[in-house]
Image (cartoon, rainbow, N blue to C red; front, side, top):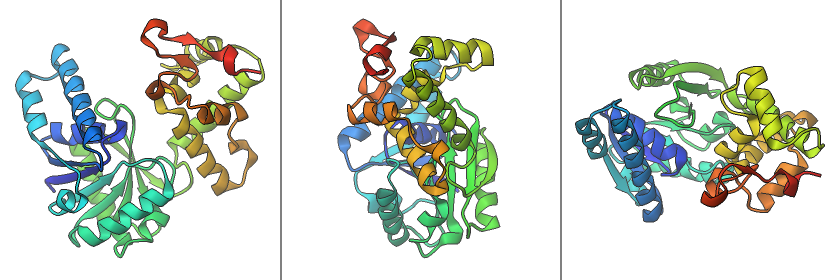
Amino acid sequence: MKSIAVIGAGTMGNGIAHTFAQSDYNVQLIDISQDSLDKGMATITKNLDRMVAKEKISEEDKKRTLANITTFTNLVDGVKSANLVVEAATENLDLKLKIFKDLDKFCSNETILASNTSSISITEIAAVTSRPEMVIGMHFMNPVPIMKLVELIKGYSTSTETYNTVEELSKKLNKVPVEVNDYPGFVANRILMPMINEAIETLYNGVAGVEEIDTVMKLGMAHPMGPLQLADFIGLDVCLSILNVMYDGFKNPKYAPCPLLVNMVMAGKMGVKSGEGFYDYAESRKAETVSKQFAK
């Protein structure tokens, strides 16, 4: 397994491509937008430059990593030689189903198909293909080049051979694979998102401000980042999407998104990627809280 296609050049996609390329895999990074590909490659280059500056890799390592990545706007060309395809598109069920239908048509019969979904059912995704036994969840953590964990989600039909192949591959990336069964939110987000949602409820109810809530969790619970700052980092739209998947899947009100989160997303306040969420990321006002604007 030497040729890896990655679909989506956004935050997760470019991180996954970076990680495989740095481990000397040939990576085909695919996106429908050339602008997105250019931005993704710029992010990879910037992150590699940072690693060089910290003397974690050499300049030659950086050059080799970048040389291992080829970009494509055409899906057929990008996946035709792939041994593994990792889909890292937007967390949208209809989009993912369409991508996997196309992958099933365009990829070799021996190609394993993986999704980086953080909450959507692998069984449902696999069902639109003719190879459900070769479909698996490969949920990387952000930032991908740094975080060790990979949740490997087995769909109902995922074969032991597919699981073992992807598990061994994950270890070659210097990651720690953890086997997870196919339930909404898997493990990471089933635990994390209710905590983030409860932190938002705490703000919404006026119990404390943004910095105060984050400080309690950082100093009192030894979390490296407060839940509201983490939500900004993940993307508030992504948090909302995951909570909706879990709410629909479990029919349990404890997963219902806080109205404040819903309103912020509707207002375009997505966190770091939009420049504003629970914190303001504008250069002139970086890390200033905007809790008064959104709290009750």
